[in-house]
Amino acid sequence: MTIKVALAGAGAFGIKHLDGIKNIPDVEVISLVSRELDKTQEVAAKYGIKHVTTELADSLAIKEVDAVILCTPTQMHAAQALACLDAGKHVQVEIPLCDKLEDGQAVAARQKQTGLVAMCGHTRRFNPSHQWVRRRIAAGELNIQQMDVQTFFFRRTNMNALGQPRSWTDHLLWHHAAHTVDLFAYQAGSPIVKANAVQGPIHPQLGIAMDMSIQLKAANGAICTLSLSFNNEGPLGTFFRYIGDSGTYIARYDDLFNGKDEKIDVSQVDVSMNGIELQDREFFAAIREGREPNASVAQVLPCYQVLHDLEQQLV
Image 1: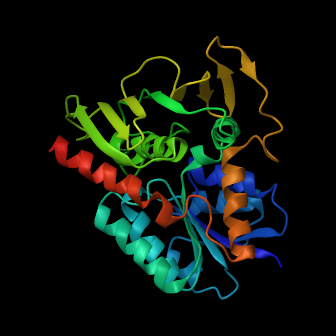
Image 2: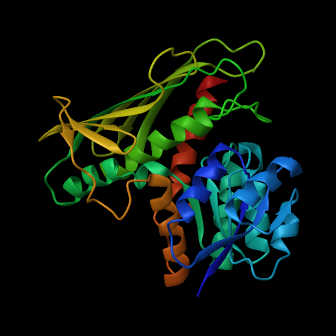
């Protein structure tokens, strides 16, 4: 059975999903949704997608569509995820699930009612570098004592990863911190019981904090320190240092190093080195097997509770 997919959001991240899906057998993107019709048609032509629209409802009305991947602006995620579930479609929504806790809770409740697959794009669970560390933890060879994480960008104007103007404003807490908050609890194997946050000055035009510092503590005693910035002139991205009781490891996207900065081969951890592709493979496998996926909406909801609690501290 070929799983037929509609993808909403033909920007930088939507294209990453299209590239990943090309490598997955028996999956076909048959509808592409995005805000600007001309640009969407260009992307659709490149990837051989026949149906193009600017309205998600048009794609949801296509009977053959089994599943939807949402790579749309943050503020639309929860409402669009609900629309997909209401239309009887499985849904994967890019991170973050929501920017208001009650919206994420509504999606989790609707998924439970429908029994459909609803997954959130917490890619770090799937990157080979983080999978390698998790396997050591699962084997009882490593326990996390501390995670030290830096999420750094240079983004003082509203541009996306392709250097194009954005139609929405990115957010350090609800978008970028979500990756680490979820990953910390996931790798520690223990819920977060304490969380603190402070933020720097609010940008006069963008209306968001450009710098933020977060501290987390898990029930088992593990701690996490997370620094986030849109002001950093230097290497961009998120860099994770795992400090454990039997080793130190540094994950930089799909690459992994030990504490002495010696590279660890993670090429055999999974069928691909592309975290987005692996994330999509899990989504489609869960649909075929009728099971809950890793990074299901239900599994990641505690992360958004922590983000909500942190936001209350920043008011």
